[in-house]
Image (cartoon, rainbow, N blue to C red; front, side, top):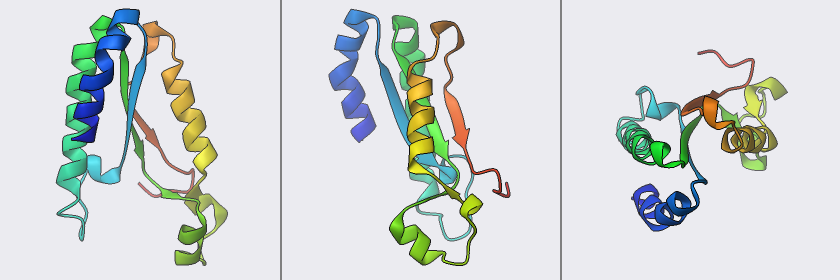
Length: 125
């Protein structure tokens, strides 16, 4: 519900200025279910569909809405401890995620992205 409330609160100002962006981040569960994630996947899929509905409404009014799927284990201290045997290319760097979101927010209006998927090059998908 946070995404919906955020969009309702800030969309009028962004529409008024004919600029702005809303970027929601999710994970692989937004695209497909996996064993052990039956309770989680529907919520992430619903978030992605809500973002798409918001994009279709706000996009023509000058507000860019995108959904970024992070299909990876984020390189953090606790994830490194959980997967100590994994090589560096198993993880995605937080800075790389931030850089791509910055890129999406600053895209030319003639080529706005909605679905963006990020994964390390070594990811099996």
